[in-house]
Length: 144
Image 1 (cartoon, rainbow, N blue to C red):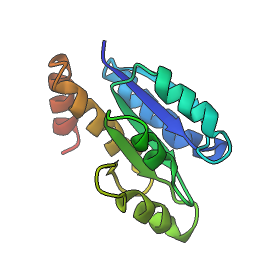
Image 2 (image 1 turned 90 degrees about the horizontal axis):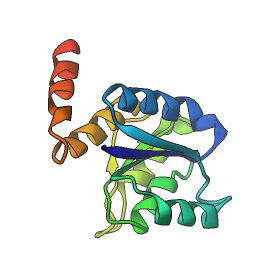
Image 3 (image 1 turned 180 degrees about the vertical axis):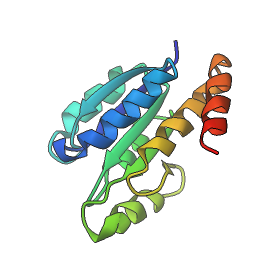
């Protein structure tokens, strides 16, 4: 069974995270969903990442947007960052995510674009779970 983890940095990010989880589940992808701040609970985040059996992570964060980068620094599994529009129309969050140092990549989607994050996670998982391909193709057809 394919598995993803969706982590949001605070309660204010929950809507974006829950929408991503709903789409992933519609594809038949099992999800862990957590609210864990990289700044307020670094030990809890470390423990979650270490124990997680997720094959891909989605991290939603605004402001300094450190969450996806911190997750990426602690795993070699793919991490997808979703910058949240908290200040400056989300541009500050977006730039924080795309400017990761070499060797610690974070795939980053547009500001508040939880849908592309979920689809990208499903595409990554489809390389191992071919049953996802038909669902992704249908999603693509229906979005025309």
